Image 1 (cartoon, one colour):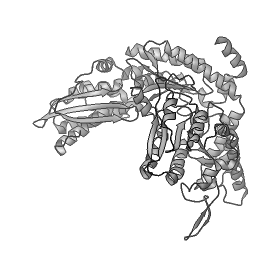
Image 2 (cartoon, chains in turn red, purple; image 1 turned 90 degrees about the vertical axis):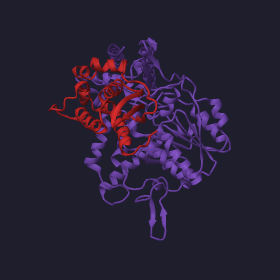
Image 3 (tube, chains in turn red, green; image 1 turned 90 degrees about the horizontal axis):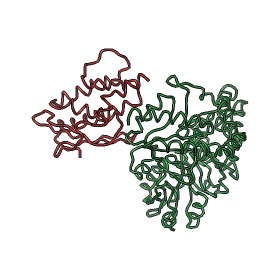
Length: 148
Length: 415
């Protein structure tokens, strides 16, 4: 059961019960994320100002892993540029998919999700918010078009 | 209940059945495997594994094509499975049995061959709210191609089809009715014989998706009087990648081929090709021969057990599971039809099914969590997903006890 307690750390359970930035943002870029495997849906709101993520929030239903991941992600993204957000996506993705315990970038609070790598069936849960963010940020920088 | 169960145990020796399935001795995450995911795919008895192995060791050759001994053996085994499938469904003639890749393939065959060649703009295809995506999407495709319109029979809060609405939706415009025999998401057994009679009264042709019925119920396509009946080998203790389509002979004969290729032709020239007779007209290309042989062995396996006693055993385990899960605080059963088989779908307050699935798995308990390829059913109950424990003939009360212990662990962590 040690892998299980590694996955469901207290921090993750807390974010599941009381997710941070769990709200809509009026006028922000809105991006839908959907995991057809489990039916989970997530709406991400990203408000950019001067090339920087000024505010980011999410709504939707999902498992503890997907909610905690979205909650922690929104905390981590504030103040980052689109490029920095994309770089963080890559680092996070490497952390949850790498099949060895080699050195990965220190991702601070996000590293509580590293245990997901032991649960291949749950990687999609942890990455749903991140893929949604990548799409939201891409549309923000590539062309000023709302994805709604 | 206790008395009923002990008399069932006398007639049905579940320990003996379990010994026939080698995988049930497997350990997962250091725990004995508790397999409660048979509606997803069933496990396979030794006799099926051996039949397929023997086929490759002693009979493998292409069927219907060569004059040598191995081809004769392979053809005899393959066609032998057709006769077994006909007997399994009480089909009137083995010509009415078409081997497919599985239920999905069978439905697509009927939709694209029968549906596409007969449907006209404005014709109606009647489905039900309980359908698996595989009995929805093929009809949407053919509706788009032909201008036909899809109508859907609603369900009540127990997860039963609304028979009044079914009657109201039937009209001379209804050309095809496609419905599941047993719901994969909720376990509801639909009153298909009665519904088929009512559909025939307005001139509709009826396809029954028997994927979830085949491992549990004794099926008689003549008594049901259905026009098409489809099933998957892998849900009924046979291998993956093969299935059966039963079709009324007159319909199969009139239908155009689904796919073109070898074995489905009588003669080919560049000017004109003559098609083979049924069922070969629908079996283009080298089929899944070992799979069909394995399916034959699975049918033999089922023929060798007392099906009524097996069903009584499964019903007793389902009843026990329902009562046990109901006692867990915050558990809510989804789908409480009066007639059910094999499936217990439920949700736990404050716990997402996916999290429950992972925690159960760590304790050796395999269930499916999610929408079960039945998004309309989930939408109908206003939920994204359920935890689904589904039963095979090999499950026991002890399996349910392990599930319940696991669910208490889930609650400890989350509630």
